[in-house]
Image 1 (cartoon, helix red, strand yellow):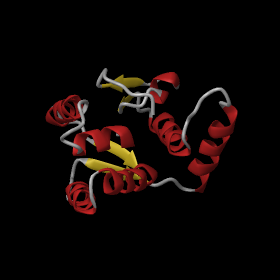
Image 2 (cartoon, rainbow, N blue to C red):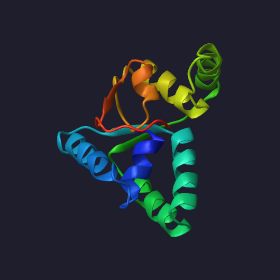
Image 3 (spheres, one colour):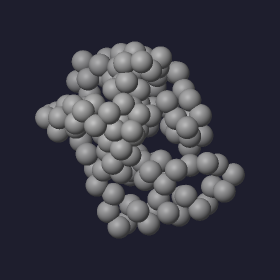
Image 4 (cartoon, one colour):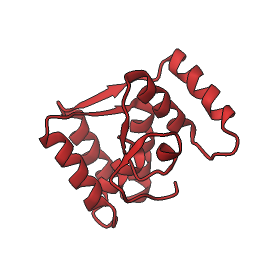
Length: 136
């Protein structure tokens, strides 16, 4: 799960939030679990704080902190180095470093589907849900 999806799901005023929440809930109902990185957690917490409020960020933190259906993967030195390589290889793309960390993790864990609104995941060959997207 990517920052764009986390933020949309947390923001009830976001027009894409409903599609993200529905896709997330369907995945969890089918027995799936969510995977994200510590970099995405950092980026999401900060974005929610400044876009919504510190209280909203705290509520989001409590939700994910208590979740048994969320796997948080750490970006260690090896993953960070592989992400750096991707970051500088694709000069014609506007990938964030956090995106590159997610790409590395997804390839490593053979995750093919991303819950995101960020079109960069599609550019890297991943299936993106929901179909709604933004140019982040």
